[in-house]
Image (tube, rainbow, N blue to C red; front, side, top):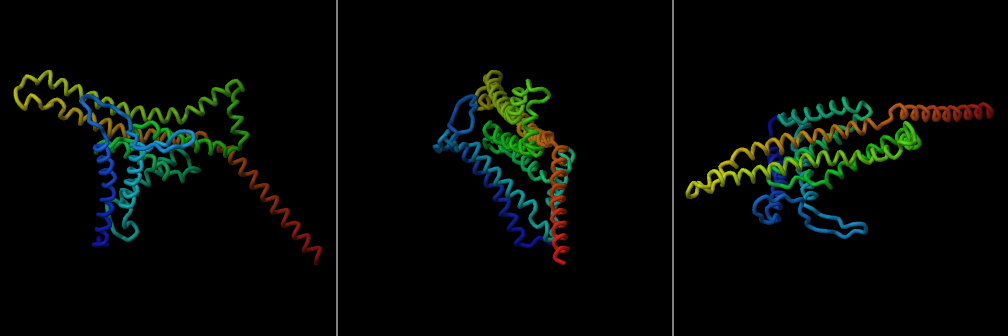
Length: 313
């Protein structure tokens, strides 16, 4: 089936809606970032503080950009799947199917069949993390350079880890803190709490360090240009020749390769921590006991009903 005019119009609208969040994020960065000379490495700008009982809720540049990336991903998914059921053949449909197949395979290999429904969640983490890091290429502040954002992801993963550990029973979960001997209970508690913190710091530290290194190298090359080529008279002496090319190569590594790599590592740690904490044998035993009790209860009820019918007869 060929693309109709209506199909092309919807495609154009979806593309515009994907570009719009990036344009808004870049414009916010330009309009709100104060002018500075030399090296300027700052965190996310805070736009507003909303009073709350424990502490104020900060509406920061990182949180706004996270929502902008979510909007981008939403319209990207609509664009990738637009017309997939109507018979229109597009290359992006093949790409969407490839992404689904690879994510399903990744989850199956690392988490097992019990967690096969985790594919959308893992794909969402991959997409959100990768696109948040890549947003720096268009001038946005990457949300992955803000620790509170990454810690929120780590806290969500920690809740899921605890949820699936409790599948083996509350008593078994508590007992696990006192193994192999009760003396290790404080260490086990610290190890449990350290999981989301270590995941967050690993992701945040690698992304932030790349931004810092890129800024330092770019500034150093600017100073080196003035030292080496500053003697050239006129306009040529003011052009930062040494800043051309090298910062772009570093940006390709730190923003593209490292950003995508950290997204993959965070997703892998999420899968391994959730599936590794799940007591599958204990869960299966509990389910078998529940099923046997239910069957015995139903069987007893049927037997009583049969006796009542027999007595009435």
